[in-house]
Length: 527
Image 1 (cartoon, one colour):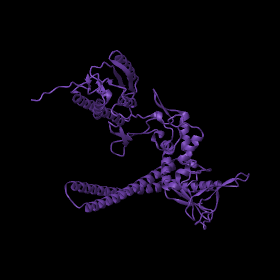
Image 2 (spheres, rainbow, N blue to C red):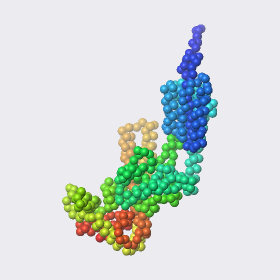
Image 3 (tube, rainbow, N blue to C red):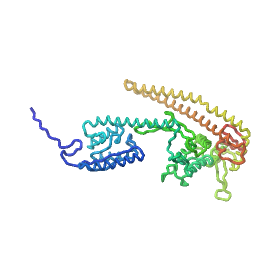
Image 4 (cartoon, rainbow, N blue to C red):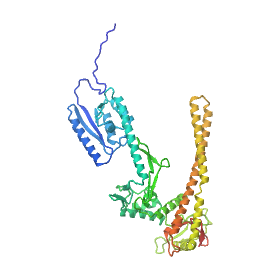
């Protein structure tokens, strides 16, 4: 019978240190609080102080550092900067033991908890969870961790769900809550949300530049930057961008209303949010707080944004006449041109932008002065408003036609059904190919055919949705037109830029120096 000799181990398989060697363990602690309240920050400070004293009191431990994250949620590791730095330091051999208050402080994500403790264990770094009294090097620690971490994750899910439900109940009651400090012109006091007049002036100027002067969002951003106006964030070094201006022009908060639940969380672990496109209820609260921009003016801006989108890249922001005056000969827009620049005879005239370009040699429409255009519009307005009631009635009839989207809705439903059928057929074909031997060239041909049908149906769906949205946008423009008509005087003696913008769709300049004004209800008048 063979003789077996046991050779005793000399290395600890976990710490990789010689057995019996007396050496201090390099110990760090991790602390975290998940809210921004003063009470939680007190908890945060006390955690840090407590763990430093706790580690230093153990003669077999060597204090390394306290790693702590303030006001950061535990469900997602990505934003926990100091936590990630601690893990990196552990991998670099700077830490042998991590002490933390509980599993929920370490991570509320079960996968993260288990994978991290396993990863640290492989490199000889132990984790001690004080509340649960678990040492990750112990034999049964992983089983216990899995159970408790799952419970912590479920608790986090429950909390997230409860918070979400609480917010939605408040929304249903019309109680608003929004980041007022991110909006130019608002602040909050004990009495509620109030206006910050100095900032409100900037908002009003943005609307004026857009509506009265016809400036683009890019042009407005440049003016604000050139004048050193701080951005809504107020951070030093930040400059105005197109999106900053567009956000101010389109957000209902500036007319005193609040649309709630514009976005929602789709994953409570990753905290991923998406725009609410009808997946869940949203809530609209009228007059929820003081307004900066009058509602009718806000609606005018929305209608003008739609008009400019239709024009596309051809739109120019050079003055109130931009992209509204059209050359009768070639269909191009009129634009400002400076004559006798730098002399005492300098003046601005308006003519067809493409008059001297190749292909427009026959363009014989006249040049016009600003005074010519304004004078003709005042006359057109006064003649049009002679029968104001009939004008409003005509506009209501046009709106009724525009809001009839039955054909578009039918097309949308048909294409959505087509897409669903094609998708199901493709899924069946893919599954069948997994379990049944077949000609792969023939399979690819059929799959490509389905893919082609899907893309074609999707394109038709997009066009139907676009057509519907265009109709509804024009209906909104007519609504704005009608409201403006009701408030407008029956006669004016001088130019009014707001009336020009909200009532007029276009002005076509003819060779005989007349202008055919087309109002947004379709009525045309030649002056």
